[in-house]
Length: 136
Image (cartoon, rainbow, N blue to C red; front, side, top):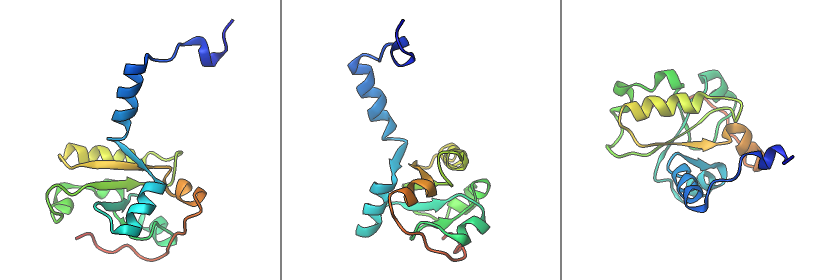
């Protein structure tokens, strides 16, 4: 009897390539965000957790907009075509997905920073504290 790992065979290579290439259209990771922030980002990083959580500690350079507040009127102040990268607490949290869905429904380009705050800290990167600044 095969293990649970082999019980369902892996996808054929062409399908695997398509799947993994597509994943990069939806997500990025903490390391890539950290590197981009050090060079001058070409995206807007949004912490979608509560204002209280943002104040306790957030990724440097992020703005705080709770996912339920990602609405058209709030996002209208950003340049058309702006890429938004969202994060929440971590893999146990779906706030970034909720926010990404809202932005996608508004027709805005969006990715999720997988790992969120937990992943950021796991990579050894520092957080900063402070109150959220108003979005544009």
